[in-house]
Amino acid sequence: MPHRRFEIQKRKKGTANSYSIDGVIVVHRVRSIASIFTAEVMAVLTYLSQLTQFPPNSKHLLLTDSLSALHLLTDPYKSNPLIQRILLTLSTLYSINSNITFIWVPSHIGFSKHDKADSAAKQATTFPTITDESLIPVSGYKNHLPYTHSETVEYILEQPTSQ
Image: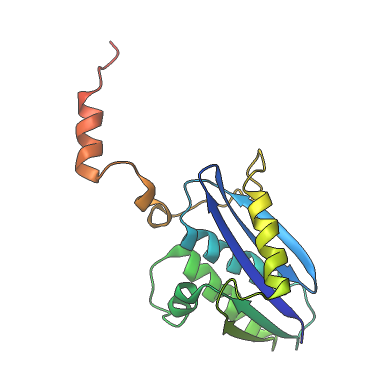
């Protein structure tokens, strides 16, 4: 059963994720406003979407260090649109008898495949352009706003209006 691995990097200059399918590492620079959690979930979604291209009755092993993403996948009633898309993609995969096993592994434990994905994600944070243009739900970046909601409203109201 092929191993799949994810790595997410968040830097001041950008956010990126990577995953590996059968030893081929795929990297994406995502919108900088994305939280690490959102980038992780985007990687899971992108990866699972790729699995729909495999023949029916395939077996897949997904290794990830994103325990929070795995926890959310166990609750089909979550309102996060990315989680809902993952659950829909999983339903599609299950309908063609694909078997996906999710395994949480701690990060940075000297696992060479993890280190390669980690390095690729770090490099992708420096890409000059966004390679994953997916829309990010507001909940995926609200913690990155420089002000609280009331401070943002106050700032907007203080701005001069053009006449």
